[in-house]
Image 1 (cartoon, helix red, strand yellow):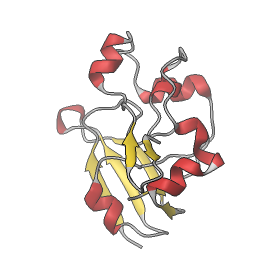
Image 2 (cartoon, one colour):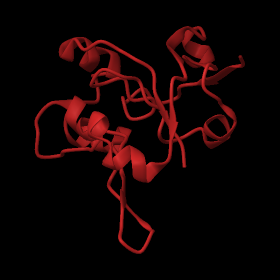
Image 3 (cartoon, one colour):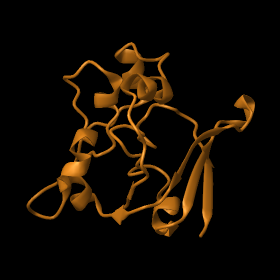
Length: 143
């Protein structure tokens, strides 16, 4: 078992994505996603100015490729839906739609800019997560 850690500089709910019953790290931190194995732990820390506090911790239960992640019904709610009002729908990290030619169409990820434009600048993913009141199970998707 290995422990990976990194500083979560932007806490938007996109990466990691704690919504819909499992915490996923499908985007960002490619070195961690390439190296982590089932059974490893990933911990996100707040920036030094915020005390390097634990933002999240998750155990890697599963590793799947982007195409499988997009097609797997368990993760369908993690496909962003910008027509819905709540931030949990917009923060989806399941953004790589497989195309027939084997390539992917990248859907627009939520960013701090889109959060500001949607008037969610003061809402962290933790607040949105608490609003949704969902249980967390760890999963990881890698390319």
